[in-house]
Length: 592
Image (cartoon, rainbow, N blue to C red; front, side, top):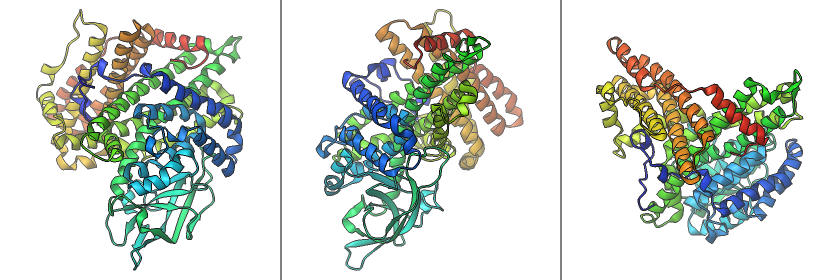
């Protein structure tokens, strides 16, 4: 890390990373690959044979499978060694999340326990709390859940009504309230519960044990997907919570909730990769078996398009996921020299990359929805049958656009958080945006003969960034403080940022991969198509934004600038996609 330039959250809009500075999947070490293989073996041995039974609501079976994963050490990947875990890097945690992501509703239960059910105590607990709970959570002796959402408090979490009143002797908080949509509720031993203490305006957090008198767990909800996960309401009726079970400080609960959501969002961005890879493999195997008109459907151009597009979008998201994962590890190393508590340093490092966390939550969940939708389509009528795995994949995918804050909330967070960080002086977003707005033509980078392949891609991506900057400046100038209410325009800016971050991450990965392994025409095909498509998507989003904020006199001028900034060279996308699909078809599974 000595010579690495570590970008701050959102800074990718105005700065470039070097290919040598990003982490790519091809760099996983032997230990990381062994952990991933252990996860895959566990899914094959314990999850897939039981998934149909689990989906019928067998809480005990799910609980037993979870405990077996704990006995194997899979639940302790993120837990520090001093509390019985393996203390692995954030990159390794994300690889684990990805691999387990292929486990359908087991993945939801596992990730809820290992993430939001365990890590709040690791990050915010005092030493006594950590010693009491974390080792048993790391082995699966205890199973955890996270209780934030209420009937009247979803995205607006701080409006929750659950209340905690300090007893007269000061020994207990008397907890009353209701939580809903709680994953693992039916069998969890510990709950992280958010409540307002007496008349406080903000939340506090508590560690609550399910066996305590007054804790009542409702029946499992009947859901569209993830049927195997236990999701229920929990009622707290005069529950006596020992005062020492307050997590963090009084009034710190809202901050804890937000920080844990950042972690949940970014890990969801990895989790969906495993589910997507499973669905792609299901897609190509079916296409290689199904015949119509006397030939395999995998020979049809329309099917090849779908297979290739699944791969292209996945590789772009995957590149972005592991790029920021290593940035978090590097930021954690920096913060540990400033913050004595390693748990707090870890969550601060994750929270620092709030822009990328929200961005990847949106990108990842929408990637998976695309992949599973096309998987069903490739299967045709059989894809609609419960006999096929893709039917389950399709149902299970939909929740990801709601989990960890809806995609609508997260889209707003991407652009809004980036601008707020810039206002604090973390990077020069507005100064660069003003330059682009005042002299867009002068800053446009023309194509030059003689530029190497990667320099040309970077040129296109730099221009796309300038389209985002132009929109940011124009929108802030037009709407000023009222921009927060112009959600459509903020969404336009966010969609540009999503494409830019993924395109740049994919370009950096491809360049570094070639430096490691030599020229790779297949990855260049993937990059060519993604950048080409990104340019057109950015053009649409930028034009929509300009037409929403520009004065009549400036509209035509700015639209011409956007047209220029979003120009990408012509790519034979048909042949590029066919080459990508042919590789997938030949291997009969996702292996890239």
